[in-house]
Length: 584
Ligand code: ADP
Image (cartoon, rainbow, N blue to C red; front, top):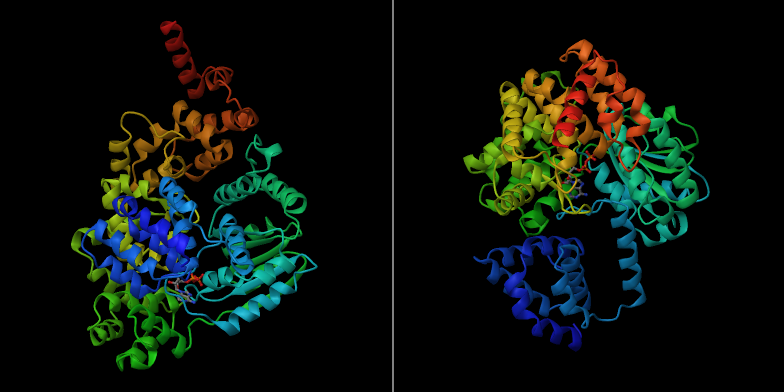
């Protein structure tokens, strides 16, 4: 590290030691390739936060300019703006290669491309194949389908494929935009498309006041416009697509990389098509490399059980990662975990499944066994999360009734054990389960699911008993989107009634999410709700949907007063109008 940088770091040492929390900073530095897992573990071994900070600075001072820059960037990303300012004057000048890679990283991070997992092994043949197909999109729109079994590493490789300066420069100078699609209904697809439109429109000054598209068709047209006019020659990555209807919604003559389990999905769309198969498991050498990285050893030096473990896992990167994380913590337990994998206790549950996920079940079970019982219960609570949904820590803080500091610690533990994944592209970070892990939880807790949803509702009601969440609450989108879902799953039909037949709820949700999602809720939970009142609300929304998309938001009481006098919508509006009048 050059002298100026070192000196600046030493001058700021006290301030840094006092304030930083190292674990997230180190995540960035590990994924920048600056810190090794070994160094990270050594720092985390120190007993107090301050000693960890001091240890990290010691390690940093031994490193080069890139380490200084990576640390500086990590501070900025983790909102330590003041501390980053202290280091700004010491920033070393970048060589052109350095500058280039930082610019690429910004493109990928703005586009929402996930970072590498902390433990990562390269798969050069597969990577080259994906890149080779992506090069075919250089002069023409089209589709590259990366297909294979769940947990085989498709998303990780799709993200890796675009970490290539030459590829981006030559083929996708307009940038890369990542969207997790997953298995979703029309309304959820709309929410995902809305969020993509929102991201693409950010920073486009003329469009900042655009209302969100209110149907999938409208979203498709908006995307067509954005991709052609604003982001020509960019790449859209659609991760984990299940249905052809979802894929057709992106059939807008642009360049798409999609990951899916269903090879024939792209048959339903038009244009040039290329395919890349992903094998379900890694070969033995690569899988051993993952285990070796977890235990900070050399693949050749692993104990003899390692090969059998890999074979029991069938090379699945997801399962190998779960076992690797356990062995990092319990390095003497190779034969114990091998025996665990060999037990077939989940055979019956999985009989009906079309894939063989037995090894995953065994590995998940082993990971859960080493959690302290309280944390195991907290993990079980995640069974209520919907598939493919990423949540900010605040949602879990409400669900668990814990302070945010404690929640962060629990989440860190789950992430360390590969039981949960963190999306660092969103601020604050969002957390999610791999969908196979979520399947496992649901299977394992099948008899308690309704109770767990009840707990979610109870915790929400306790937390938001004084006022409903508002747009200033980081978790508000979650609750407006999923509260009816949790109530329905909990069998709390009375609560669902009073929520969905409330003009206040309609007002709040429409303001935050638009009317399309609300209408969908009435359709989705139609069987539980009273038919007549449901249709009254639905009709009100269908008639007034266009007003509700306008900003400033209209007076919903006024709109509702034009409903038939016998309707519940009218009755509630009248009551509110009378209350207003009596208040003067
Ligand atoms: P898929 O998209 O096929 O369902 P993912 O790409 O999400 O699978 O991978 C599942 C998990 O497997 C990752 O979260 C990671 O823990 C592990 N994994 C996948 N690929 C690799 C890799 N190349 N190196 C290390 N771990 C990997």
